Amino acid sequence: MRDGNGMSIRIDILSAVPKLLASPLSESILKIAQEKKLAEFAVHDLRSFTHDKHHTLDESPYGGGAGMILKPEPIVECIESLQAQRTYDEIIYVSADGEPFTQKIANDLSLKSNVMILCGHYKGVDERVRQSVITREISIGDYVLTGGELAALVIADAVVRLIPGVIGDGESALTDSFQDGLLDSPHYTRPPEYRGMKVPDVLLSGNHKEIAAWREEERTKRTEKRREDLIHKK
Image 1 (cartoon, rainbow, N blue to C red):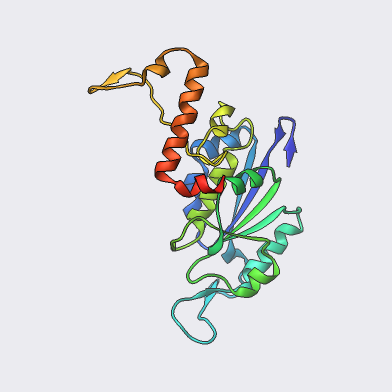
Image 2 (tube, one colour; image 1 turned 180 degrees about the vertical axis):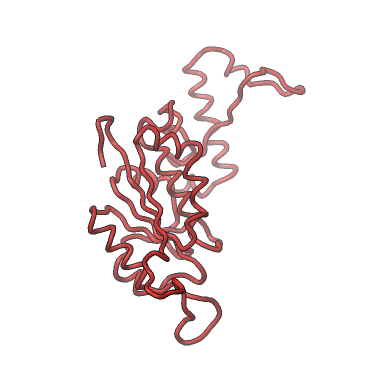
């Protein structure tokens, strides 16, 4: 999706509990992105695509075992109804066993026009959904959440803030941690001294070349100390 201002993105989120998404999508950077018409969000209640009077979304797993599984019919029908309206660049399922979410993936997704995110719930979704309609599976970490809604919000926030014009200072997003494989440098603001702790002299010098060199050195130091694995990837 593009408008007169350049790039923009539409993100459709499919959920069994859509109320979990309402507040985060209407605040802060995500709100600003929508007001600037650089992002559009559409939340879809999977229960709207059920066909029984109880609006049943989940069933017990074949073969026995604990937990419940999201049925395939409501999910596939919801996805197909959206695909009938537009072409999607990615249909993402957020799951614990998906590929680890990284800044690179966020950068890639920020260049897309239409992205769909399916939120799992309970023990997950019927495997046939993953086999037939999902194009990408993403995990935000090695832990398990009650549902995929929080993970979908993490992805949406990380992606949308990268779209030119969403953040007032475009350079801010480009210098974030992980953009080039390193963590960010330390940051300071007024006052120059607080409880005996002083801002490094170089940041007060006005010498932009020295400041840039200091920041790059600090980024490397911090990454080596806290995330040595990132150094090995470079």
